[in-house]
Image 1 (tube, rainbow, N blue to C red):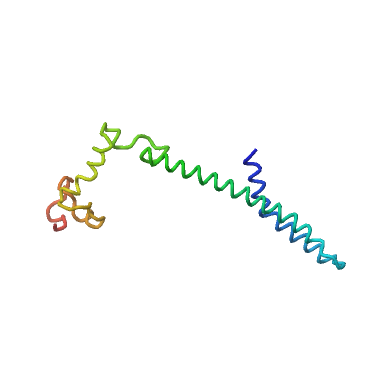
Image 2: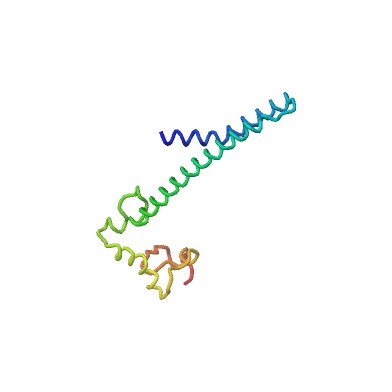
Length: 139
């Protein structure tokens, strides 16, 4: 029922001003010295503000749930709906899994992993480069 009320409030945010425009046109066409549309505008304006607060509350709640799910996913180490992490499937601890990712950078004597452009042209020593020596880029 909460979702239905929020959807109605969201719909009213668009419909309310349209109703007010129609009422203004009716009052303008039948003008007899009194702008009665201001009272309708007051009521519709109050209802519009209440609807806006309902929609904002729902947006804040959904944003909080999204933040909570992101936090839980990061605590779990990835996506909430993904299976086990690749390092864990082989029986490695998280530290060992991280070490296998970092170790190749230190084999080359660098303090950082190679940049993408360097990776394309200079493979690590442990990678199998089955191309003939003439086809390999110079190191």
